[in-house]
Image 1 (spheres, helix red, strand yellow):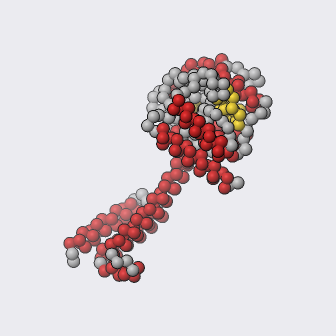
Image 2 (cartoon, rainbow over the protein chains, first blue to last red):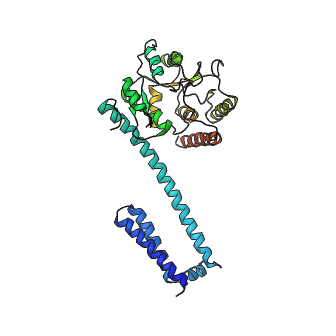
Length: 116
Length: 221
């Protein structure tokens, strides 16, 4: 086993451990646990079975195997970032709406006092 | 703030009773305590939500209380309350749903800097191009609305630098907008929310917002 493979396996183990910790602690919503869990498994396969990347590259007709990694993960990260921007925009609206409702409620319940 | 309130209190418009509302957008200074001390109607935001959300909150309040009209006015002394009757008159006569106080119709009072006027002009033309609204003082925040307009504003009000975009929104909603001449002052305190560095960003953002909003509203019919 090459040095780099050992490093890769350790890194993947760390990554999976991190994800598992977040899932157990309930800090990740299920949909994100699924995405990151799948990522962990994909990483694990690539680090344990080195030839998998070459086989995959051959299958897609990619001459330089590592470029497959770049193209695949660039694409995934892009999609995921767009998704997060959408989520963020929605939450921005929701938080604003909540704050407005709270301000109105505060006025109704205590008729003009600062803080709650 | 206190002087503005005093001016508002003394203000009388024929046939209307006025109920001033102050909103503290989670200021870190003692704004809220000051408002309590003054014993006025006010709302206190639990978090900072910015100018758009805060102004919209005022409309929500007016809507909830069932007010006939709502007026928005800068608190920094730029908008003299004694000019208010000019804004309300077209609403009382049912000539318009929205009335915007303008510095540029009769060109009296504080006229702002050349650069700012250039920007304001740009938005005027953009609005004209998008919705055919010919509002000269497109960034003026001295505005009065009737019940119909308040209802629409509770539904949507832009977040940041909302004034020019609101014209696009309200016109698309079929509101009649009228611009009347008012005399404005130079601001006596505070700084504009539009500062030097962010001017270009501001222009681009408001333009894009207006265009996006217009396209969205057109496509939704």
